[in-house]
Image (tube, rainbow, N blue to C red; front, side, top):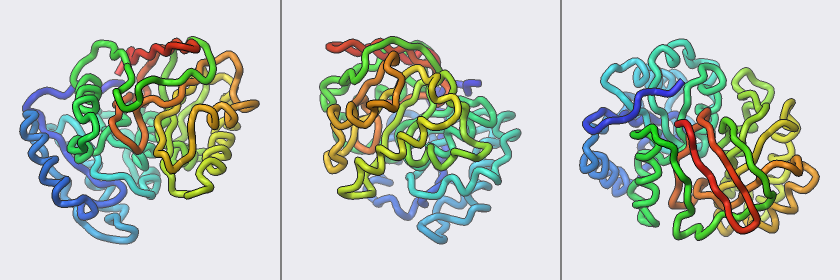
Length: 310
């Protein structure tokens, strides 16, 4: 299920399912309001987005209320998140997935929002979008690339050829191969929170898009290694069709060589594995659909990636 595409003049609702709006720098907030207005959209904010509770978030009830209200409001055509954080998964047992399925909307965000993306896709079949928060559009590094890849995904239906940004320069082929399949994933450690719950999407025959942020300091590679191993032990993981790893902050110490070592003996040898695609916790970034389809061809010197349905 794919929601109607965004059109000029549409209302875009900002929600705060993790950290709240008071955590956003004021200059970023004001620049974001100007950005959306200049692009021709009506930006509005959920009622409880500034409520301050434990761990920089509003209450579970308030966050759930804002999500339900945004999906039900006929004027709202896209829902975009305020920030990531650590606790979006608290909301999953309280969401009305029947209501969400009845009122499909574009939902976009990244990082901790991975929990919402994959749970909603798992429970409803609705395609959601791993992409910028409402204020990410104001960040300077190759901003045009981030903007272009976002609006291509949420405003058009044509296939999207994913090419590297100037910052990335190229995507690295870790394993050669070709595949076509449905995308799940996002932030690896957040996705793993869904294991053993009713909200974990079926991993069988999927293409994994994976990234992570360094909250472990010098131990990041160890943490990433075991988190990946855990995901690849989920029932049906032996049937995955491909893996695309995002880009990582330099502090992570994670490059193509390290990834090659990490996936050894964990990943089927006949599937394509790509490293350094433009998504993660550094910029610029693409927007990709959780539940959409992708076609990948990975050769030693070249990679081709086309998002077919979004």
